[in-house]
Length: 373
Picture 1 (spheres, one colour):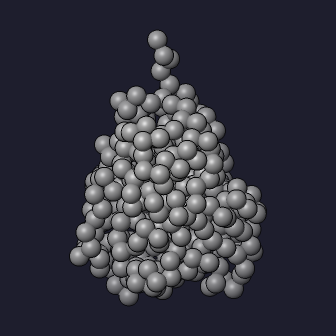
Picture 2 (cartoon, rainbow, N blue to C red; picture 1 turned 90 degrees about the vertical axis):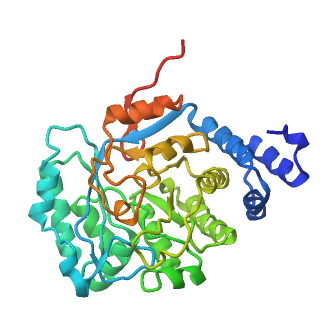
Picture 3 (cartoon, one colour; picture 1 turned 135 degrees about the horizontal axis):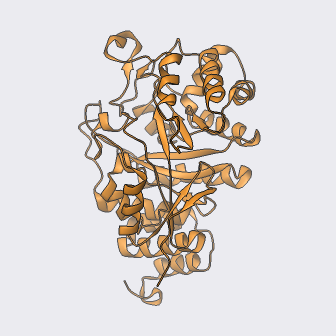
């Protein structure tokens, strides 16, 4: 890569901002998407990552529970859900069945259960409150990260409660934090085409804002690589950055790669690996108030997730233990997504990074870093 002073003037200015720890503008971000080489954005993103976390790469020991794939919504990109009218093609787990899944991890050092699924009309606020209470009664120390803003919006509207009232009930039942799903792309013109019938951008942001104000941290996502433009990506990240400026409640940003298998957008070509790495790097550069950027290895693939560690990523999620079907059903690289702690540590070390096991809130559980000789 050329020294910064040998770069074209717009790129040199952006590189100087990043090196000085200054925030880039939307126009700068668009310039990076349109003009910057992969080497440049990778170098700048890695500079930020190392400024924040040194050589550390985080992971956690977690497992997923997916209560149902039956859903009242019909998102064009989804290969996972089965419409409620055709629910014989799907699954619906009882509270007892889900608690049995939790009990499978008794005596194992998992720290988090991640609960997301379809929006089922009979799995309401009372049902999920009972589920969270049962999990906490069985294993009080297990961190419950549960339900997307899409699930909350439907759940609370059906219960005729405000977002704050609904979240208060779930927090009292045992909810500890919120995943970032359902954000997709905030731009209304794109959202109308890919997920017109579920909560809009303003609703998604309002739910996360309320959660943050109540002391419930959350994650943020963006579904990329389909019909959105660079400008749509920037608009999405700007709204997240603005909310983070106000609440500081987001733990991490997770770009989610669109997969085109067995859905209504199967005609849309998937993004290339080069485009994926550019997106991760530019997200790390733009989202200067997010402490962490995560590549979700079950969706991206373990080797590609490993590669992302050179493009600003400092987290590759967790052990998962083959307990999620959301991305495998859409044709992700990982059809049986499970990695042991030892495998994750090895994967991170192969990338010449220091593996750090964290809990959901990024407190260090185990330091697997290798001392420099």
